[in-house]
Amino acid sequence: MTVLITGATGLVGARLLPRLVEAGLNCRALMRGGKEAPAGVTAVEADLLDPTSLMRAVEGVSAIIHLAAVFRTPDTDLIWKSNLEGTRNLIAAARAHAPEARFILASTSNVYDADSPRPGREDDAADPQQAYPASKLAAENALRESGLNWLIQRFGFVYGDKDGHLEELPRLVASFKMHPAQRMSMVHHRDIATAMNLALTGAMDGRIVNIADEAPTAIYELVALVGGTMEPSSEPLANPWRLHVDVSLARSLGFQPVVRTVHQAAQEGLM
Image (cartoon, rainbow, N blue to C red; front, side, top):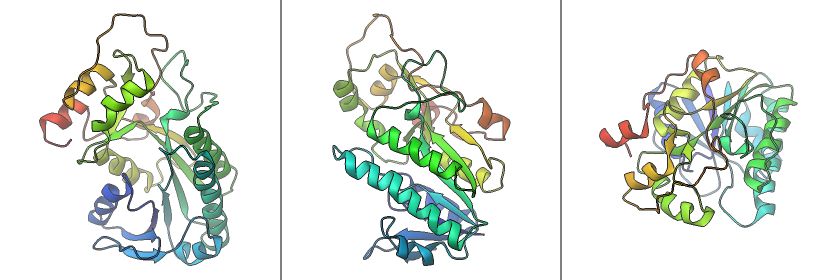
C-alpha cells in the first residue's frame, strides 16, 4: 500500500511517518523544495497551494493522510488559505488522479462548542468561532462532499515523544485564563499511529471519529506533570465539557489506545 502524507515534517507527521514505515507501508511524503524525507520514505516535491504540483504527488497512491495545517499564528488569512484552500486543492488532485484512494483528514476536537452539555460527539452541531477550528470544520465539509472515500479523525490534545506541546500548557493556561478543574481529552503520538493504522484497514470509512485516550485529565494535573504551577480554584466551572470528547465511537470501531492515560506516559518515559 502506497500512502501519501502531507505535513510530514510537522509536530504529528514527523512522529507518525516512522511508525507507518515500521508498519510496512510504502510512504510518500509531500515536501516543499529543499527538504529531505526521513529514511525509508519517498519525497515528492509539491505545495498544497500549487494545484499543478499535486498531480504527480497523488498518482498511484492507495491512501492520503492529510496532516498539514496552520495553527498558532495571528494571520487568519493564512490559516484559512492553508487549511481550507490547501485541502480543496488536494481533494481536486485526488478526484482527478487517485479517485479510488482513501482520503484521511486529520482534524481537531476544538471544533466542538465550549458550552456543550456533554462530551463532544461526532454528530453534534458545531459552530467554532476561531479561525483554526472553523477552517478545519470547513475542510471537513469539503471532503465529505467530495465523492471520495473519506474519513476524518478529530484529535484531542496531542502530546508525547518530546514534542514540547504539553510543555507549552502553562503559558497557554495563563493566556486563555483556563480553569484548573477543566478536563481535557488527550492523545499520545503513539495512538495517532494506532488510529491511522486502523483507519487504513477501512474500519472508519465514511465517518468522523474522535481520537483520544481513556482519561481526560484536569489542567491543574497536566501543568504539574510538566513542572509548572497554577493558582488552584474552587470556583464553579462554567463549561465542564469543554475540551472533553466522547470516544465511544472509536472504541466501537476497534480503537484501543496503547497509551491509555497521560500518567502512564509519564511513568513510562513517553512524554
